[in-house]
Amino acid sequence: MSQPTILLRRTNNHLPEEIVSEILLRLPVKSLLRFRCVCKSWYRYIATPNFIKNNLLYCNDHNRGFFIHMPKTTGSMVSSSRPHGQICTVASRHTFEAISELRIPFTFQSGYPHFVGSCNGILCFSDYRSFEFKDVYLWNPSIRKFKKLPDTCLTQLFNVSLGFGFDSQNNDYKVVRISESTAKPMPPPDVEVYSLSSDSWKRVGLGISWRSNVVFHKFNCTLTFPFVSGNLHWMIEMIEGGGQERLFTSIILSFDVNSEKFKELPLPDDEGSCITKCLTSFKEKLALIKFIYGVQPHSLLCSIWVMGDSWNKLRVLPIENLTDFIGFTNYGLLLVQKRSRLVSTNSELERKHKSVLIDPETLHEKEIQVDYRLDVAAYMENLALLDGANVVSY
Image (cartoon, rainbow, N blue to C red; front, side, top):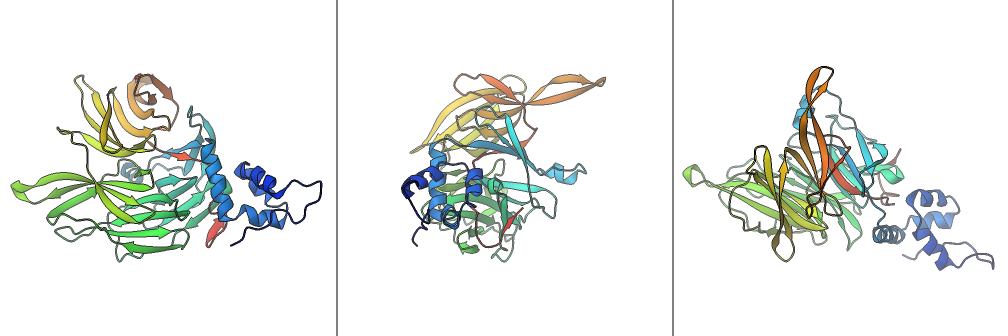
């Protein structure tokens, strides 16, 4: 498909077309939305997939990014009568200082949005309802548009896990939904993939060998499932066999969103048990975080493993009074929440929590002001979802 002409005509007073194209490429999204009104040729050109892709590449190359964070939805919140705000906060990726607030423009039956992931400025949410996560939305706050995805193509949904990523080869956004089976012993989970370009779901096979005697398995949902180097990652914790022969194991599933193929990754060869572990990303690499009890009371040791050609233990950090591990910043700082000392409030003792950035190299800590228990993701302005089927403006 040929690109639309940017200028309808050119006189000696007009810039060459290629110069106009380069200027437009460097503009922020809000300016581009206004400039679509200049003329029909600009309106069409700014909406072309090639321009949207090149504008995104320019923004990535020039570090035009932010963080976005929102309160984490938990079972205790759903069971409580306390209202849950549908507010996302855009913050500086350097200081975490709030820049603006965004209200989620759609609602769920449960009233509680579940954050699935963020990719190139597109946010993915689902309904926080146990076992289903049936309704899924894609939302681009920078252009004030969202889209509800079509219904599942699976026959049943149970203990669902969702992932969201970008297919760079086909310039396409994809959502992966994995649903467990209720049969015993447990067969491989059912998988479907949604493609934004086709606006449809399709089944895909797991394509890897599955243990024949799995009696129980669950997805580790401590954090959003990391999308790293074109792959989504899930950690599955399972029980094999029964009685005294039971074996507790964990595996990592990696899904290439370009080829839509799964593979199994090994876990680090690390002896000893841990309190908990989770997958995340560290400087655009897959990372595994493991926590064990420290020597001092109320202290934990945090082991950071990073995947290169193989797993490498980056650091072991002592962290006192840890209540929640949130993730890493783009610069490799840990964001955690800690229990602080008791303080007097209106003649009553109240325990306050604080959010802290920790430098793994120097162990320097910096307190920041964010909500207690939250999801955090990279965010940037993007023109994706500008046009398309069933896209809603607000």
